[in-house]
Length: 98
Image (cartoon, rainbow, N blue to C red; front, side, top):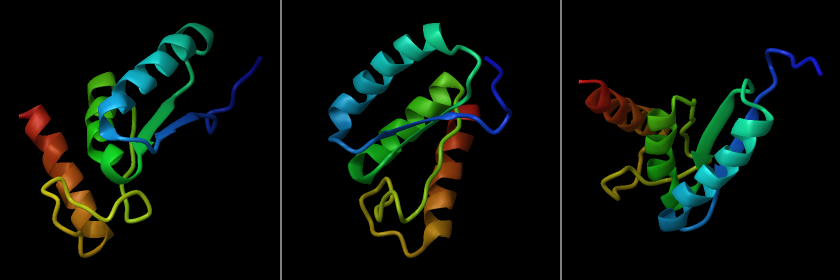
């Protein structure tokens, strides 16, 4: 089977933050064997957003962030716009790289 470069698997979790990492890990275990070369986008909604962004960074996958995913910054404050969420995500990424 030939896969095109625009093909990816979107893993989106929308449940409480405690079980998301385990759920995504279980899915990754299956996909890793079945489709190891297919890129993954890991992201969540509401309280799952920030833990899954961390998981995406640890696993080398891409993620996304925006007001359609969450209204809250990692601190729990309400984000004023998408740019505030992107800045918070960039801060998380930069702190892991440093």
